[in-house]
Amino acid sequence: MEQHEQILQYLISGLTIGAIYALVALGFNIIHNATGIVNFVQCEFVTLGGMMMYTFYTLLRFPIPLSFFLSTATVTLLGALIERGPIRMAKSKAIIILVFITIGLSSVIRGTALLTWGPDNVPVPPFSGEVVIRMFGAAILPQHLWIFGITIAVVILLRYFFHRTLIGKAMRATAFNRRAASLVGISTNRMILLSFAMSGGLGAIGGMIIAPVTTTSYDTGIMLALKGFAAAILGGYGNSTGAIVGGLILGVLESLGAGLISSKFKNAFAFLILLLVLFFKPTGLLGHGETDRV
Amino acid sequence: MEKQTGYKEVNSIVIQFMSFFIRKKENLFLLLFALAIILIPLGVKNKYYILVMNVVGLNTIVVVGLNLLIGFAGQISLGHAAFYGMGAYLSAVLTTTYHLPPWPTILIAMIATGTVAYFVGYPSLKLKGHYLVMATLGFSIIVNILMVELDKITGGPSGFPGIPPLSIGKLVFDNDFKNFYLIWTFVFFSILLSFNLVHSRVGRALRAIHGSEIAANTLGVDTDKYKTKVFVLSAMFASLAGSLYAHYITFISPRSFDFYYSIQVVTMVIVGGMGSIWGSFFGAGLLTLLSEILHVAEKYNIIAYGAILTLVLVFFPEGVGAGLYSVWQRWKIKTLTKESSNK
Image (tube, rainbow over all chains, first blue to last red; front, side, top):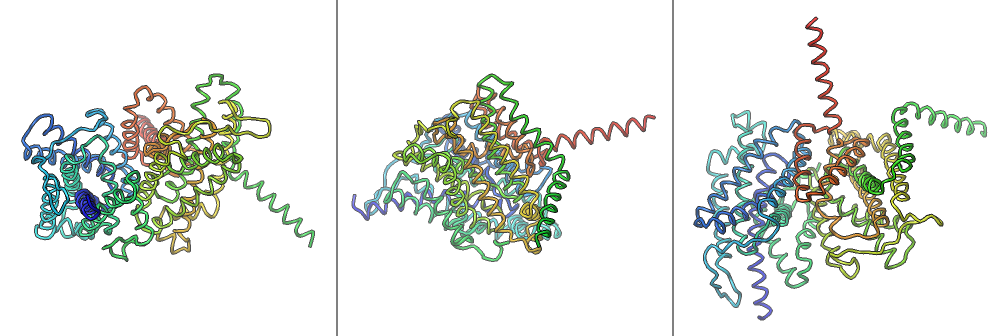
């Protein structure tokens, strides 16, 4: 393979993984905007998406659309349960406490996943065959197209939901100013519940569509979700366009770094970028300056 | 002139003497604690128990430092495993491969770790909200990758053996009992230092930050500076514990310094109670013992830690000790009122 073909290949795999980071980053943003907390269970949403797909599709041999739907629904429900249970029951609503609670829950879910599915990586077959498509000398798998397609669809749906529907607008109002939102009659608790559910669904979709490319295990979600968080910071924490831009850029940088510099340190690149962004431009590429400093 | 300075000296001695009694209860506890440290190895002859207590001690140093950050600056770090590991690896590599003297190396490791912590912490602590938790987590993942991948220096995933034990003159700390005194001496001084810090101007500033950052800021407390300082200090505590660990066990591997260790120490802080120094000791002790018991089934360890962390936070956000105490008090009031109404 020639140099430019190789780079094109890195770009494609970078954009693929970047799409996943973008979905996860969107999930982080939705909860952050609604509650101000960093939700660590996001890692487990991604893991469970992949493992549910494995259970329904690989083990139980359900058709893809049904498996996809069931997996998303399960994790969405889990997201809602987490808000309904520990987050709402918590005696103290201090942000630091709530963040710790999500760290604890994340450990519990990861441990349970380990007991349920074991420690090994398991395969999920691609959604539609493995016939490689050649484009300018680079190889594209049908699964890559699925990832792009589903991500774009999700982003469009989200945009429609947040800007055109009443509930979406109510959620944005809650994110903007919770007290004012409740004064105009929005049930802010319900909006927070919804944001946890949605972020569960987003994480699950990310985990599901990447599983055929990378295989999946009880802890794949940690790395994917933490990099998704790095993507959210890179794009500007809380900014949804930023999440998508950040995700794609991070994916491409990581893929180029692993391919051209050293694959041994692949996982370190994303976090190095995270630290650099925090250092030099903490508001991210598209974030607003004034809200972030004390 | 001379008379005056003499007067001042006497005065300061009196003040110190008085302040000893003002913080009488605290000092009494410290004294009892020191006594216990001296006496315990004389009574306990089982090597395994001493080993477990030494692990408790090492964890206590990390947890006391981390609690200064969590309890007083109100910030979360998930990177303390990395600082602990940096202390351990710097001590191991510098003394074993490069034959530097161990004691100064511990200091070098602490300074190096503190410097790195400064560069990780400063940018994220300037920001409102919880950026530090992710910055430290990202940092600790990078450190773990380096431990594994720089195998020529660190020994890679199989670990780094043959670290020399510490020694003072002819006294070599080469068994569990000698290390008990060594480790717990450091525990004692880190607790003492923390108490002094908490009662100092810095401690008051930190508590003000924890109460309300904006209010502290308007009162002239440079919040970024204090938060960064306490973060650096807590990283140095962890580094010290890491160095002691390396010289005690004489073998280290990346697995001891992974993400789960960070979760463990955070859980110890929470169980002991955020902002409680004795609580740190209590939390470290309780959960280290629990880990030893659960060791039979390591699989359940993650679930157990997660569940404890979640349950304690949901029901006793102020820590298990304080939580149970308030439950007991409420129960007492209830029974008292019942009794009086029965009469």
